[in-house]
Length: 250
Length: 269
Image 1 (tube, rainbow over the protein chains, first blue to last red):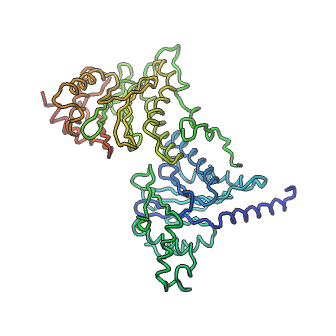
Image 2: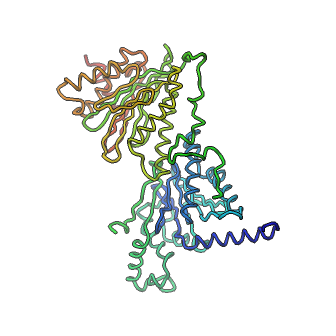
Image 3: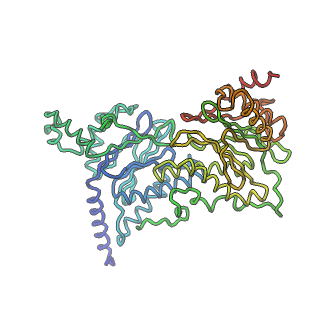
């Protein structure tokens, strides 16, 4: 069936399209360096998407929950064996990604006879200061993308760029605190997940019907569940849940 | 599923059970002494103690490790923080005990992270029992026996409890107090006496009274047991004292210990 090269390439293209289509409706995961540590935030419908992996390290993901679980388990096993046999300081997301999941994801993606893994992964590692924080996105085909300060794991490049732009524009450039970023985050999530018409905005993004905006805010927290975790610089051995002030009492 | 775990490190039959991941690498299965005789130069000797006081449980240990009649170190930490709700006080072979502490620490974290919930107090107690049971060959060789105290806060009830183990892994609850190590007989007798016949039982001691008692107990143990490090002495090396309460885990600062020692232990007749 795949005995000729072009058939294999064709199959890979189809596979890429299929995976992109499958994760198309996913809600993005945002990673942000703040004064307190690293905040990972998203909204989900059914299954949590943010996980503690090891001291200083957490993971976010979009895609099929079963595939995310496969990768999560691999990361957990690698990190804990490495941390036990050597030191917790020898466990890094660079090594977990480069020598752990990236080669396996690439191999799984290129094995066109098998069902594909439908996921994209975001790894975060908190440092002693925000300058040392690191984000790594690992895509379903094993590609890596490093970033610092702010990152958005979204189902499409377009959505990622848009959300990244909105957050860069509205967040303090540096030394931002958790309290400062949470309201901005929920507003940006709304602008990504709902149309301008639903939000009561005109074409330039000005709010012309505030009631609609409030309704969308209510819908966002009602239809989806807020999920936020903090990799705390002062106690990095356990992630902390972050409660969104707008989610309280709902 | 095409993402196969080909490395054996990734195969584990029991979900959330970290020791399975490292079983082949546990060193205590492989070390043997010649002709069954105990190895010389293996460190041991200790006094560790834990007792309930008004706010929670005080856990303390001396700092000395000895090998035969040699002092190997006077700066060993024998009260290990496993997480923010559990302490392991070690007596016996430090090599095995510290390794067990490390496995236990990773086991609890691995369980929490993989199963997305904290393991129960009973589960923690059982993991340590299994590690001790697996250490049995080393214990019977006479070179790797470990008899720890495990002090942990119950996640559900917030009650802090003391457990003590024998070298085979049998574990029991020390309702008011538990002790371990070669210097423990004197300490055990004193604690029993105080709890039974002093005007107030141990559970009614204040924080300061509990710390002072711990220092006096360790000094008494060192008076009779050469393998127990003294309090103070020529070098400013102080015992390790930690307080685990329903709300917090606190390590007593060396400065505070030295002040109490100078004022309430050294100069008091």
